[in-house]
Every structure is written in C-alpha cells, then in structure tokens.
Amino acid sequence: MSSKAFPPGFLWGGATAANQCEGAYDADGRGLSSVDTIPAGKDRMTVARGERVMLSCEDGYTYPSHEAIDMYHHYKEDIAMFAEMGFKCYRLSIAWTRILPNGDDDTPNEAGLAFYESLFRECRKYGIEPLVTIDHFDTPIALIKKYGGWRDRRMIDAYLKYCRAIFTRYKDLVKYWITFNEINMLLHMSFMGAGIAFAEGEDKEQVKYTAAHHELLASALAVKLAHEIIPDSKVGCMLAAGQFYPYSCNPADILDAQEKDRDNYFFTDIQARGEYPVWALKRMERAGIKGLFREGDAEILKAGAVDYVAFSYYCSRCTTADPEIFAKHQRPGNAVFKAVENPYLKHTEWGWQIDPLGLRITTNALYDRYQKPLFVVENGLGANDTLESDGKVHDPYRIEYLRAHLLALRDAITEDGIPVIGFTAWGCIDLVSASSGEMKKRYGMIYVDKDDEGKGTLKRYKKDSFGWYKQVITSNGASLDQRG
Ligand code: BGP
Image 1 (tube, rainbow, N blue to C red):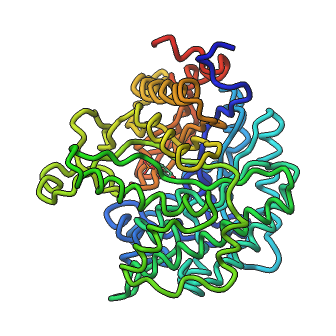
Image 2 (tube, protein in one colour; image 1 turned 180 degrees about the horizontal axis):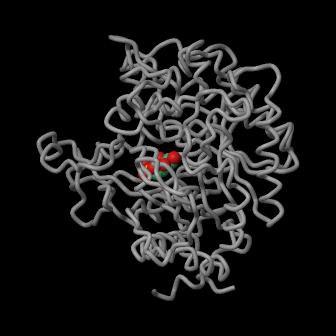
C-alpha cells in the first residue's frame, strides 16, 4: 500500500435521507412527519425555522417530501446502481413515522419495519454496509401536536421506543448508526431539526437549549441501548461542520470565529465527551437559560458518549466581529449559516463557497478536539445539471469538486494521520434539497428525471460522475491522481 492510499476497508459510498428521496409519504400506514409539512417555495425557511406554524398541508403549497424521487418504490433499482458504482456503504435514514406512525405507538407498524428490512437485505446482497441515521430532520407531527416537539422531555421516551423497535429488528443487518443528523441545525432550523414552532414572544434561546438538552440525553441513551441490543454496533453523532475562519488577524475576529465554532461544537462536545463544556455552562448562565438538568442527567450523558464523530462538510465559513465589515461583505447563499465572503474562494451556483482544503482543516480540528474516529457522511456539489437528448449528463464540475475534496481528505488521512472510517457522497442520487426544497439543486451521480413542478418520468440516468466515482472506489482512491 502506498503511503498516499486510503486505508484498506475504507467505507466508500453515498448518502440520502428518507424525507428527501422516499416519497410515498402516506403509504402503508406511515404517519405525517415535520418534513411533510415544510413546503417548497418562499415560506420554506420560515416554516423550517419554526417562525410560521404549519402542522398540516395547506392549499396552494407544494410539499416536496410527498413524492420526492419515489425511492420507496425504486429502491431495488437504485441500490443495484449503487452496487454498480462499487459502494461499500450506503447511508440512509429511517422515517420514524413509518415505524411508529404517531411517534410513540406501543406496537410498531409491520409494513414500515418490513420495508427497511427488505432494503437492508438488498444492500447486504451486494456487500454494502448500511449506515443508518435514526433521525434525519424528522419529528412525528403527532408528537409535535402532543408535546410541542423536543422542547418536552417526554420526547426522549418516544425516541427510545422507536430506537428499541429498529435496533431489535435490524440487529443482524445494521452495525453503523447515527443518532441525529446535523444535530446543531436545531439552533438554526428549529422546526426542521426538532419539531419546534415558536409561540409569540417566547424565549427562543431557552426553548432551543431545552430541546437540545433533551436530544442530547436521547442520543446518549440511544448509544447505550444500541450497545446493549447490538454489542458490536458503532454509534456516532453527526455535525454540520465547516470551520469558521476569521476575516482578518484582528484578535476580535479570531475570538468571533472561535465563538461561532462553539455554537456548533456545543452538541458534539457533549456527545463525544459525555459532559457539557465549561464555556457552554457560562454561556447559558449569561443567557439566563435555566432548569435543564435533572438528577441523573450528568450520568446519562457520561455513559452515552459516541463511538465516532460523523460530519457533513460543504464549505468553510468566514466571520468578523466588525458589524460594518460584516454587513458590507455578507454572503448571500447559505440560508442557515451567516458568513462573510472569503475572497480566496469561488462559490457554487447556490452561493456556497468551495473550499477543499477546508475539509482537511475541519477534519484536523475535529480530531484534535475529540480523538475519536471520524466519518465524512456528507459532501458534494449542488448544481443544475442538463439531461442531454442522448440520455447523458456531463458534470465535470461535480467531478472536480469531489476530486479536490477527496484529495484534501486523503491528505488528512495520510499526511496528518487522522483515522477516517469512510466517505459517503451526499445525494448520490438526485433528491430534494433540504434548504430550498428544489429538485434542480442536484447532487447525484445518478440523474432523476423530475423537475421543480413535479413533472418527469422518475427515470434514472448515469451522469459522467457515475463512472468516475466507480473508478475512484475500485482503485481505493488511486485514480484521484489522474485528472479528467
Ligand atoms: C445537509 C443535510 C442534508 C442535505 C445537505 C445539502 O444540511 O443533512 O439533508 O440536504 O445538507 O443541503 P441542501 O439540500 O440544502 O443543498
């Protein structure tokens, strides 16, 4: 093995989420989930942030999760294509409400359990290791109505009931688990991340940190439960990562970048180390956040530290403490993380800055902080692809993006010595965009014929990146050294 090689057994693959690809939102007993009432279009972000309450589907809106790319009915065909690309691993999420339609039912829905069992067996047939996100932006609407989402501590029991059902059923099929997708998103998109819609005038910070505490307890208890039911399981946390850079070497900017990184690290610090960091306790004290801890909570967190740290990486971010410079250079684009323009970087059609080296920097920062194995479970380029009349899709920009990021990741592994379990490219098959609800923001190596109006045959086509990624996997990354 050359010193520049990815480690043997590296888990190459792709990633999706139930609500963004399955469709069939009311099939076979599935209950309604938060993501099913987040519309496409101009109100998407206000609903996702919890600023506009929408707990049912309203006239005049389209809801992209309802059909998505209908993977519910195409999964065999799709997994066969993943296998053809040589995937060693496929990251997907289970829709909570396929298993427990009301979120906390005493008896799981057999049709839902059977669906994922069949899907996992299909993966295993090709030697593909499933990596399962238990909760990917997915809170049952029934529990939002009953409890107001994760602000209520009773959500923990409901989540554990769901975990017990899936751990028990899939104990021989699934070894790798993630408790919550991008858990730090709770602070930014509270309805999407935690089923929280804010009431007029309520203390949002108190609500968010209370919900965060509950998700952290649930995550810790799920780690323990998984280890009990599936002794060789590996359970991870998952962070929307991307290092904050200071806009200048002014110490005020350095501190500002450190503070913004901490907004995100708050969750993984606790999940990886099993306790609140001191700065977080101080922050909460200053913000007047009270009443989170009950007796026994500290022990639960301590006993439920994760086995590995998974993260998504799309871009780094840049920040300054100077409000005038911030206002002048603020980047449009990423609706979630406010940042200023980094003049050294280009950006995607959707305004996300492109920074491959940032993946190496972020990987190092996470390992310095946690000393736990890392797993890159999302990375990719959202772009507007064209399906040619001959059925081909030429996407050299995607190949270039992925190639540059994989080379940077390889350096983190081979030059810096960081243990990385695998890499699952986001949206390996085109699916609905989480932030915009669009189909035209495509990430896939497989094109799906569907547009933003919901029209299309749903037929799958291989893009140029399909063959390219296949070569990367087959050569365990050696082909990355060849351009084009
Ligand atoms: C992450 C989510 C994914 C995914 C991805 C790309 O935040 O975990 O669900 O969608 O980002 O983002 P987008 O779809 O908004 O382009």
